Image (cartoon, rainbow, N blue to C red; front, side):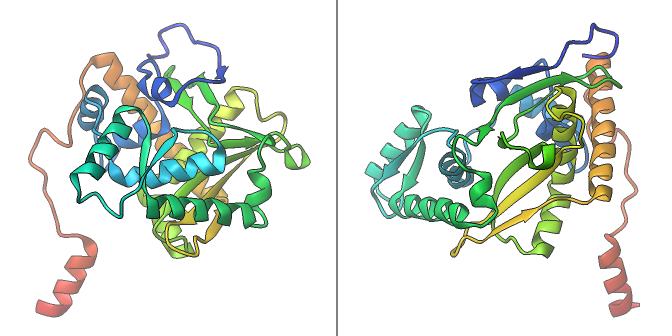
Length: 287
């Protein structure tokens, strides 16, 4: 959809299933926008959208942790086996997937329970995720005014109580490491700064932010004991760069939709140097 079509009004949808949200083809999400740009490209984005990928086991723990922390998401089934080496365990796992459930080995179930408890005990994250004190996974749709592209986002959590009248949008993520250096790399490499900027645009377009600028808080949690929690709010330059990245992706998406051409990386021969770090290292070593 481009600016040439009638602009749709923002919409806030409660109770929309995750499957219906992700299956929507009339709008684009933050993850879709990130897939359009390097290291992705429009051709890969379109193929992945038209050919949904098979379930990935590594997402199971994150889905289960979301369920326990947010109270929303797919239910899970405990597989009372130490691993999936036995055929019986594999059968129970596959049956759970077919039923839309998240299979968890007994040790994995114990792990996500401990993770959820660590969040509850955190002095900031615990009160932030108080049950009935916010809304989980509310779907928001709006139209980008610059490109006419219909957009969507689904914040993990938005507390009802706004500190000093300021709306807080919360995103919960599990990670291998949550120290500052690891999170800086993860935010940049996975485009989380673009996600934050996109979600902030969404809540403002939907009229949820009021008169004050909303805040976007990441709640990162380690997947190894003691399941440490690290809350971060990105600084202004990070949000600004994320917004600029989103604008480039939105214009790319609008152009691809308009022309029907979803290009790959390059139609010509690329002149490719070594990475800067490798070139510097090898010059010192060999030249």
